[in-house]
Amino acid sequence: GNPTPSPVNPTPAPNSTPIGYCKEIATTKWLFKVKKNGSVKTKNCKWLKSKKPLKITKLCQKKKPSNELFGTPKQACPVTCYTCGDLCEQDDDAKFVFKVKKDGTFNFKKCGWLKKKKLNARKKICKKKTASPPAEVCPVTCAACS
Image 1 (tube, helix red, strand yellow):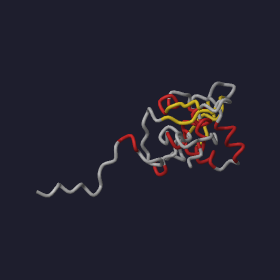
Image 2 (tube, one colour):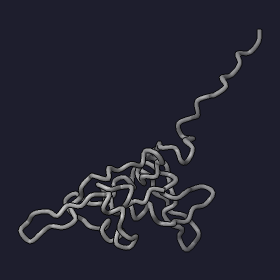
Image 3 (spheres, helix red, strand yellow):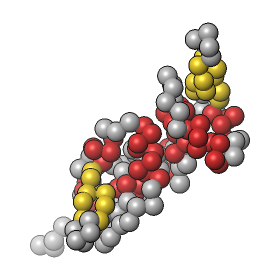
Image 4 (cartoon, one colour):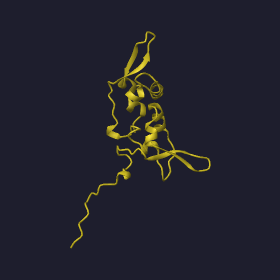
């Protein structure tokens, strides 16, 4: 008899998720640094996800080296790095704590307000470690989704 024809669109194996799709595998490794002797040190998405939001943003934004085996954190961990294209969303009306006033009350600002700031001012504000930090409330503006 004739062999069964293979399906036109075979389902890709889970470990071959193409870069740029909004899926992330915890064990996917990325290039953390190249040591002086040329050997590489890698980290994985699970490690990256365990860090504080600001540290994640910093690592994701780094123009880290990559080689033929390992990519950058942004490429390896698009979910953690907020580089998921359409899924990279924020509510421009969401409020973050801009500062704590002397009387202990909070001064809130919206992501939409932050978005209009100049880059340097935005970077400075995104680094604030307040009760509801801008980096968490406004991931698009702070992590500069790419």
